[in-house]
Each structure stands twice: as C-alpha cells, then as structure tokens.
Length: 295
Image (cartoon, rainbow, N blue to C red; front, side):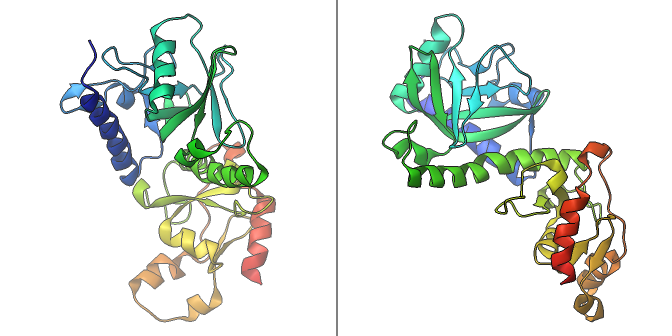
C-alpha cells in the first residue's frame, strides 16, 4: 500500500534538505553506507538499493533515486554534453520500470547519484525525467530543472545547446571536479594544510572557461578560500616547481595577523602534493598561470 502522496512529497523534500545540509557542512561526496542508512523522522529510508541502480521504495508511487556506478555495467547509461542522463530500463519488466515511467508522467523530482569511485557518489538534485522511450527502453533525465521547459530536450536549438552546456559545466563538472581534487589532496589545503572541508575549494589552475581549463585533477588544487581567491586574482602564484610566491606589494604591506600568517608567511613554501604522482598538478599549466602572476 502506498504512502499518502503528501508524505511521499515530504520525504523527497527531506532528502533534498539533508543533502543540502551535508554539502553546506563541506561534504563533497557521499558514501554508500550513509546513503543506505538515511533516516527521515526516525525512519530508515535507504537512498540506494543494495543490488540495483534504481531505488523504488515499496510504498512510493514512483522512483526516488537512480544511480550510475563508477564501474562499467551492462547498461548503456551516459551523460550527454547537454546535461541529459540516458538511464536504461531494468532488464526485466515490472515494478521498477513502471515506477520510473510514473516519475516521468507525474513530474516527480529525483536524486541522481553518480559514482566517483567505488562506493562513493556525488549527488544531483532535483533532477527530472524529460523523455521516456519504451521502444529503446531508456529514459532521459535532465540534470537541471530548466531543461524541462525546452520544446524538445533531445534536439536542442543552437542557443538552447549553448545554454545547456554552460549549465552542465556548473551542475556536473564542478561537483565531480571538487570530489576528485579534494580526495586527491587528502581534504587539505595544498598551501596551508587546513583540513576543514567546508573551507576548502577545488581551484582550477587554468580557469574552466579557458580552452585548456579541463576539469581534471591535474588542472586542480585543493585550496582554502583565502588562498583560492588570492590565486585566482594573481596575488599568490605557484611555480612549476611547486613553490608558493606572494605578490611583492603584499609582502611589503604592513597589516594584521591574517595578512602576515595567512599570506606573507606562505612565501617560499613548498606545495603539499597528492600522494599519487598521477594526480600531481600539471607543470605546464602551473607555468602558464605563473606567467600571469609574474607579469
């Protein structure tokens, strides 16, 4: 027997708020353990299924969450450059597919969990199913609510495609980039080693708007907010040999302890690098960015 519709809606809203609270507290990824042990008003309501990529609580009318593992599966799930997730029906017919289609018909918001490494996920919410193809046995899920209102989400006009790609850069690339960079740097600032994740950013070496500003760990640095802002504004530079430099005008300035300890004392300091060499920041990109600082 299904829960009252108002209760189902309240639980969905509760999930979104919980995810918001976790993010605001600095969470950049979610473990399978915490997602399967989520509780609402004292009741355990798992957000992931133990063996499937779809979560359909028995007393819900439609799908609550879908998930794509970090491992390859037999399904053809993928994400288009315009921000549409292709999510395959379950191989067998039945309740899972019925509830997935009902989520499309009723416009229910879902959570989409995307694996960043085994048993860890980033969350996108609310997301909506914008197209159902029972012949190909797939649905298409929009990572941004605004994509619901395009006339034909699968065949965008050129101006719609440009808009959608900008959204994807924010909604998809940035959470994935943040999770991978902070994990690589052990959730600590590469300059001052501050370990409070809520005060850390995944900074691009080459800005993401630039042609070379790819969302890869080697184009990223885990930086606290003051060092991130300073790096972006070329008040702080990092040499290709991983050494920190502070703008000369700032070094000469006399001010309070924040300037002295937060910036001036960092001059000449060696960067704290990821354990894995494959994650080390690109020397070429550091050189390109340092040239702007030096100028």
